[in-house]
Image 1 (spheres, helix red, strand yellow):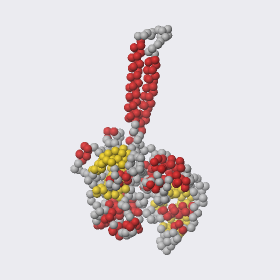
Image 2 (tube, rainbow, N blue to C red; image 1 turned 180 degrees about the vertical axis):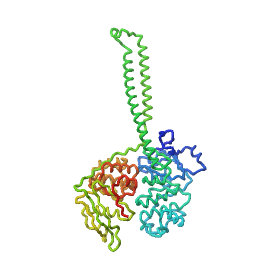
Image 3 (cartoon, rainbow, N blue to C red; image 1 turned 135 degrees about the horizontal axis):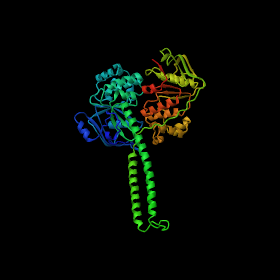
Amino acid sequence: MLRCQKLIMSVQPSFLRPNALFRLSAAGLAAGMEGLMAQISVSNLTFYYEGSTDNVFEDVSFSIDTDWRLGFVGRNGKGKTTFLRLLMGEYEYVGKISTGMNFDYFPYRISDDMMCMCAADFVEDLKAGCELWRVVCELGGLDADAELLYRPFGTLSYGERTKVMLAVLFSGENDFLLIDEPTNHLDMAARDTVKKYLRTKKGFILVSHDRDLLDACTDHILALNRCTIEVQSGNFSSWWENKQKGDAFARAENERHRREIGKLKRASEQTRQWADKSERSKIGFDPVKEHDRSKGTRAYIGAKTKKLQSRVKQIEERLDREISEKDGLLRDIETPVDLKLFPLKYHKDTLVLARDYGMGYERGKPPVFEGLGFGINQGERVFLRGSNGCGKSSLIKMIVASSRGENDLSGFGGGCFQSGELSIASGLIISYINQDTSFLKGSVADFCREKGFDESLFCALLYQLDFERVQFSKDMADFSEGQKKKALIAASLLTPAHLYIWDEPLNYIDVFSRIQLEELILAYKPTMLVVEHDERFCERIATKVVDFS
């Protein structure tokens, strides 16, 4: 559940960068900007899904300008896509969204019939009033040929489909565009093209977990924190720097308040004891032992007790203030839990070796790839790099199948063939993450029974990956795509293995979890074979890159 409070610079620590100006929903700011640019104002927005006990948004208020290139970040399941759907008018909500803009959303919903058609035949169904010549012009900006519009949409690669849909999206005029994770499944070359294209545009919200893309294409960040929403100028890196400094400031303040609260509690208890002791001595005394006492001293002792009690009250009031000021300081701090991994040690150094290796799916036709040579030694983290369709996933599936002793190629199609040599160490245990998440269905308990996992350990790991406990009672088919990926990652982490093979594990995974996984891998140094197009992740993790080009 997210609450949005008005954020003003006066409540932020002084070390924030000067360009980190928080945009408020205050009427004065809106009036000052009126006439210069249009705004989208969100006022007291509250939304929850039918049947859910928790609100996705509660009393949220903020405003954004429609000429911004706005990056939208937050944990999986926090409501990024939900908010875009609210702007599109797809859900009923409480509160108000004020704007004179028309919205359009990427990715478009492509029907089964459309998959068999050429895009040129249905672009107007995707975007009303869309003119084909404008789409062709936009495709030029994406380094794509107009012939993509005249091929059956289902025959296009992920990258080609993305380019066609983005060209349609930007072919209109005066629309504010909602772009939801456009680089999932795209190779690095296609991501670079999309990055350069979006850099030339403005007037959009970009939901992405790709740090490189957010840095290149955005000039403001809308962040769904744990309990609040903030809008900040700058790109992802400037926002992340400010967040880390803000979190450090909040932790230091929290620690200062904690120490002060401890001191005040001790002082309050001591003063209360003195007051009680003084109060008890008012009546009754031994004239022999307390020869300086008389009945007349009762008034003096009473006044002293009253003063001590007043002192207790003052300390308690200070204590309440300290507790109040401490409350909420850590509410938005991201403190990722250190994950654990259980890599196994193999008795030989080389686990996988390919010599002049190639494979194809139909004899008589060119192979998917050939002449490939590389090895995977213990402790190495090998990344496969190449364009979509070059055979990275095919190689991975062949390695997994060979490790299981599946020497026949029936699972790859009747005409599949190999050339050269692919050697897999005998008895190699592999933990494998597939790109596909569609098979996830049923309860978490059923999944654990099927995989042989301890359910409590599996749920604890999901919790460390920022799952909320309410998710554990859901059908896994109803998880968001990011949550499904996290379930597969958790399953892989719970599997002791000699080799971890991850095929595009970070699609839909939020930035915070990506950083969490980076720290895990750097700490445990497992042997890995990875296909991943996140440049930052590759730069930090890879010890070797095999380029299919």
